[in-house]
Length: 266
Image (tube, rainbow, N blue to C red; front, side, top):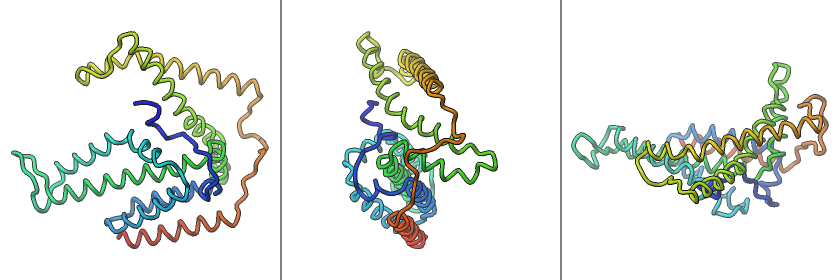
């Protein structure tokens, strides 16, 4: 899988309304949309959800290629889920039979339903990561977890870890692509053979990748210590998050749409 197939962790700068929203509003909206997505029980709710997400995607003015790239890494999971439900969920009219294997009405319904839910889950998450910078993402998580600090929840540290992990996804994918091409130039074969042979052939790729990842983590730790980094203890911010009128409109709009989706979907 090439680096171009991974969009998680990328940020596409822009000046759309979605880009301008407060990161806290986008994170809360993401949570509300995911809850609504898992509460939908009919295809009518899915159609309403698709219409809303499509409108958000168009308004964000993101290139459509990122939509397809984001789905490519989960294509195997989607197909596996679809086939699993087709073959093993029973009930209703029999559409296809081969010996003991049958594809029945309920299997087609559940397979299509769960596949659609997975795709929409990925697309909804992409809308947030592609329109929110890693720094804003960390600030939003920290502010949302701040009320839990008296309970011992290290909000700033959690936000920092998530941001670093998200930031290093594209970097590690690029490193993986370089190592893969270098190993193939030396005669390594990652494409042929059965599944066990392919897994064994991945060792020349995984070992250098892990070594590189640990080296990068060590360099990052040394750099943070050299700059006297002390976590979230009494740290000030160059840009304080402030909610504006547009943010309140956004959160109320998402809440209203999700209520409509919920009642349509049940």
